[in-house]
Length: 510
Image (cartoon, rainbow, N blue to C red; front, side, top):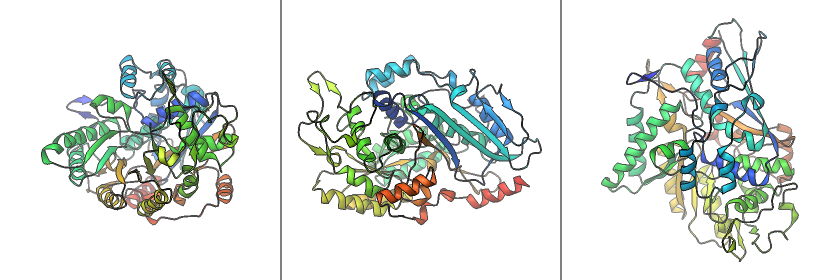
């Protein structure tokens, strides 16, 4: 592992509030408007449990969040509660970053931008992490399980997910799997970008959460930007549409990309305790915050795509009748009603009723069989008489071969396909010693409760079910959910090399 480049030490950790995915900011904007006082919890899951952090990695992770001044020294658990000197607590929005958001992300309202100028993370009150060694010898090499919980107001805690995941991944590859270097990362990203562009793929970089570290993502984006610049000279039809990471979008002058995550649907379902209407309620408040046609890619699989499509074909209330509609899609206690944004002439939005499926530019596929998904969406739009060409964003564990395959399937069905590519770009390494795959961690932080109720996700693949199992089963029964198992959706070995890493971990444990 390289600790320096060109003789200069590389920065550790997170040092910009915008070093996160755009959809975390858009959701925070909507939460500020409607649900500023909702309390939530988040939980961490390592889907590759045989790839465990060692004590040295865990201690480094602690240092990135706090000064480690408060540690419970019980032999079986090293528990942690961050203090006021936490590294993450020192991050704030700079004037330059504020100006960038004002000029680039014009969908953010003034109230949200004012809020961000004084926003601070407070890890001393909001984060607790612990390390449980499998066999405690006191050594820095002891491997164990990391437990991570976040809690507080949704508004205040929503931005933790991406930096905590990125830091966890960085810790693992700084202290556990060290048999790699940055060699050829930029050129490999350039080659990948060229192949995607040559095939005609429209893609964006989605790799923040599971990147090997900050420097890797920086090198990857440099390579992709160069490939995009060279594409015109070759006459390639593909396009790099941007990056989900707002900091890197600002740094390299490329568009920030993203709309909404499962978290928005999960939170609203938990708050209302109404899973039958949760999708429609989430869509209604989203369009109420940003308006028609803005951030208009719908994520369909939170509670299964078939359930979502029942809501997607419902009519969106017009400004004139939005408060006279069925109260089942109004959130009790919301800070404001889901009215569309206003301009100088009054409320924005069409006076004629249209369905959410008509209003949204397209959908995002993030679980299950992508080819079946294309067929399902084609049948849906046809049944609704929607002739407009819609977009499908594919974002589930992609590589070049899969992008090309899904592109052809989507285009043949009359869609405009785009791709959000993450781990394949920002955590694709080989071991220096033997050339074998250096497998990425498959880690997630998911909303686990809101207002005291469990928050769950079902998705279009049983391997991506998350949350309280009793609630998951109850919601599946309520919604008439049909269980699906996609062989290629095994979360334990998403990017290869799992067997080798598992063997390596067993050796560590001994």
